[in-house]
Length: 486
Image 1 (spheres, rainbow, N blue to C red):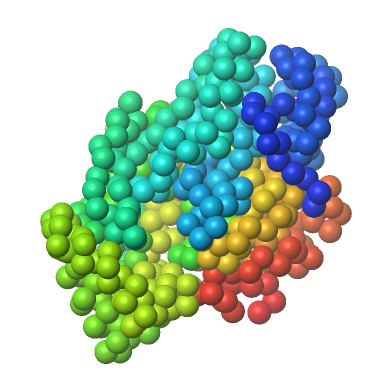
Image 2 (cartoon, helix red, strand yellow; image 1 turned 90 degrees about the vertical axis):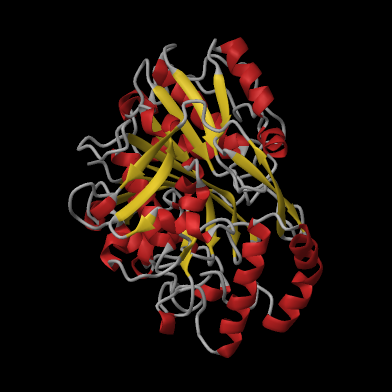
């Protein structure tokens, strides 16, 4: 299997601010665009990754260069899956380090169009955080301008989809209403991994999982005994090619969010996704780092409040909105106190993430796992990344990075290494290399080869772990547990 990873680094690289994000110069293979935007360093980074990986190397520099021809064929349906988690960060309104930028999407879409040779479809789709505004996200991505450009210049429709079936209205950190959405026009497929789930290792311990919303019972109806089922976008499953377009970010529950964690957005029912087990480790949970009377009291009060909120109790909504600040003063704020599984001891969220990757790579249209692996490619947008309290509330870090590859595990391990983290210390990344049927990694770690414009980042994955890095700061719940050399 192909375990090449390309890494382009230019600290001065920036995004274009103007849609449809034209290439920075006239490239011979892009014959359908006669305009240039010299500020578009993101586009150049994508192209350079393809070159560094040696994709269609013999024809590079000619009008016939077709770097994605190795994965995309004429007539294919290609799904582009960016990270569109939220429209902005709550604390400062920033978004460049939060979601995949249109400059990256434009570059990848251009090369998909070359590979399609005028036949096929491109679908740009994601299911953001349930309280996010897709209208604002769409505007930031320049979707309207991109659609008009491809329709006029290439005769190809860029289809845009919000995969969510509902949007939740958030007031002061409390969900107060739900708005139904159309979701995936192809519907969703119910996928029960059963013994193929990473949760099967835990057995039936009688634990309670918490998902994405107040309805704890719903989450646990789909993860009990030998049942481990997910509701997955049928468009994602049916696509001939899946191209993942994540951000380079830290993550409070799994350490980093790169290619593999990006698959949360292909779920039609996010509350079917276990995020943590209620309780502390002494109770068999991973919600808190430690137990005691204080955490027990907090959990008792919060769970009672959530049951009332689930019933749309107006008094409970108003009371919760007014008293949430008081609760933080009593029990500590989430940016200083470990709760909700936001730490390195979370033994739940990484399992859910790897389950989703197994489904994407192998599920058939009936929801069962087949032997044939889906054609897959990933391009990670790290021109501006996020460190600290990721994936939503962290700090932007200008890193000038683009990574690419055919193997989600290899690309993510390389991404973690250049961030300054040892992938072997992060359960989601380490276990992605497990051998066996329906394996996620396309090859063993020893087979991964890294190709970069930086000589110290070229070679094996092991060499990359010990090379100089960008010194991203982890989420505080992960400090001391994932850094290289700790």
